[in-house]
Every structure is written in structure tokens, then in C-alpha cells.
Image (cartoon, rainbow, N blue to C red; front, side):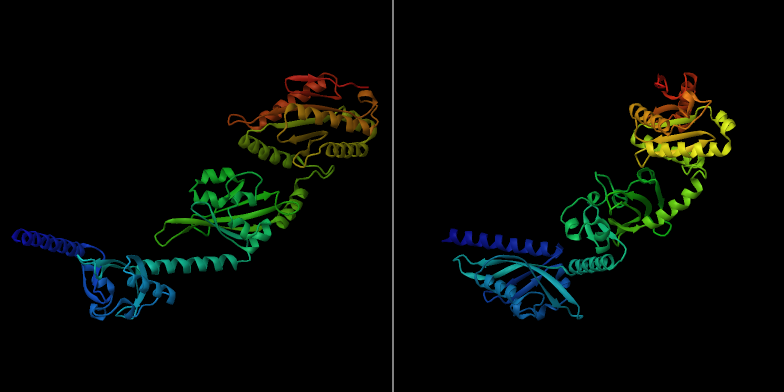
Length: 462
């Protein structure tokens, strides 16, 4: 008997030690601890964070949890919690709200375990509580912020979309849907952002902003890009999108970073502006300034600009650029024999034949000077350039313009062909020099033919 009492005493001491340890832990923890009796009435609270309850503990003692003015739960949720307690089940993170002593709403998350005595009889509950008000207020603020963002985006008549730091689309307004032909539902279902604008994967300006791309990388992606003068960290650019609309469209777009209250990057917003009409008007004005007044093809200034642009583009994408330098054979003789008016008409007819022989919209026909013309052909190798040269010679031959001092008694052309794949060590002048050398070779070997740089291709004069 003594031994049994000794064991009971040791067990009691162990239990008391455990309780003390639990209370000591509670005094250091960020939560509070609570106990209830078998009628679910609160009997005690302890822990340094009981002040986080923002309620006087006396308001809880002797009461059941559902008698303390619970809010923030539905009747069904509260009924289920009460039923679980009556079933003596453990529960975790039962969340509700109460009105604090200062009248402010406090949010609690409560977890509890049932307690049973040695005979298995239910004696109550003990558990922990946590004040999650700051978290819930932050969540509400985020939701309100998202709601405001959604209202701003969707109420904006300017095409606008938003992506997060994972480059996922979070907002896509109706104006953006009209511009791209892609609905918000479609874009938010997981469609890649690039698919709304391009035929192959490539980053949009918003993607580059979210990725923290350098100015050098951004400028390399777009020919017309600049830092925004109004928004810190934002960029502006322009581009032509052939897949948008019936004939493609020009867009001006601005992408700006989105940051939270701590300055952390959380996404990017991009706005689009259709500038197709402006571009067409600008192109019409430029065409007047950059066209040859006599022949209507591009003038020398336009040639120089186009060659520089195409050289940069070919260098960026590692494609081959072709250039044809074209000279009307014995044109001085033609002018001397038929007069300058006939000479002007001849130049006009040859320019028209050149335009008709060039089938791709990206190729540029220019009057290089006097009786000399040039053709710039992007993404064209020597074989392709040879085919076009043959077509040009045939087109001018078909004009059958009489020329008593020319080859075979009619107007003919000599063509020099050059092709290069640009690198960082060479400029577009190298391509012009090669085409000039090939043109000289064509003249020296009989005219009415084309020669490629480094090779000669004769043409029958029949």
C-alpha cells in the first residue's frame, strides 16, 4: 500500500511538474492558454499574451465560448463547433471575431483538446488561442487593394493588363480584349501572355520589367524604347504587331513595376495604345520627304536610313542581307540622243519595272543617284538575290525601250549583287562596296547582266 501511495505521489509530482513547465512555456509563448470544465465554461487563462485578447478575462470566465458574443461565423459553422465540443472532439483553428474593449474588432484562432480523467470521464477542454487581427486586417487591405486595382484596370478605356512576379496574368480589361481579340476568361485560364501578341514565344515589356531586365536588354528587344519620364522604373516602346487586326497594328506600350507597401516587387502593369493611324499619317509625310520626286521610289536619304536599319536587324537576328546596285547602261548616250524629257520618262519606266519585279513588302527600291538604282532585300541569300536580278532584267527588257546606243538597241541594265551576314566588326558600307564591285564587273563583262560579288553570271543577250 505504501508503495502504491508512493507511486501516486510520484505521478502527482510529475503531473505538477508538467503543468509548471506548460505554464512557464505559456509565459514565453506568443499565444495564450485556456481551460474549460466539463460544461465548457472557461475556468482559467494564462500566458504572457493574454493581453493580446484585447478583452478582460473576467468577461470569459464562467461562460461558454458561444456565450461571449462570437461574430464572424455563420450559424452553421457555430452549430458545428458546438456539436464537435459535445462530441468531445479536438478542434484546430476555429476562427471567429469579437468586439475588443476599445470597440475594435478582434479576430481569434482557437484550438482545443478534450481532457479525460483516469476513468475516461470527460472533464473539459484545454487549448491555445491566438489573436490574428493583424493578419486579417492585412488580408482585407490586400483584397481592397486588389479590388481597387481591378476597378482601375477594368474601368480604364485604355487597353491594360497586369501580371504577377510569376508572369501570370491577373487582370485583362475589356479594352485589351478588343485590341487583341483575346477575352479575359481566355487569358486568365493559363494562356501564355506572348500568344496574344506574337506568333512565337518572346517576352513582352511587362515581362522584362518583372524580370528586372537591364536597360541594354530592353533596348535590344525593341527598336523604339525609352525610359518613362513620368513613372519611376517604367519603360515605353513601340512595335508593329502583324497578328493584331486585319492588317496588323502599331502599338505604343508602357510597362511599370508594381510594388507593395514595403517596396517589394509584386508584378507589373502594362498599357497599350493603338497608334496605327498616327503611324500611317507619319509614314505618308515621311514618304513625301523620303521619296524621289521623279520616279516615286525611295530617295537616297531613305535608302541610307533603310540600309542602316536592316543592317542592325540582320545583325541582331543573324540573317543575310542582300543589296542590288543597278545602273542603266549607257544612259548618258540615251539622254544625248533622245533628250532629257525622254531620259526622265525612261527613268520612270525603269523605276516602275523595278517596283513590279519586287514582290515582298519589306524590300526597298531606291533611286541611288542619277541613273543608278538600288534594292535592299532583308533575309535573302545570294540565290534569292540572283532570282530577283534575273526578274528585273527580264522586266526592263520587256519594256523594249529603244536605245540606239545601247546593248542590242534597247535600254538594258547592269546589276551588282552582294550578300552579307552582318557582324560586329563590319558596317553596312562593306555591303555597298561589295555591290559596287560586282556592278563594275557586270559592266566590264558586257553589261545587260548581273554579277555577284566574287562570281560572274552571264546573261544571254538574245
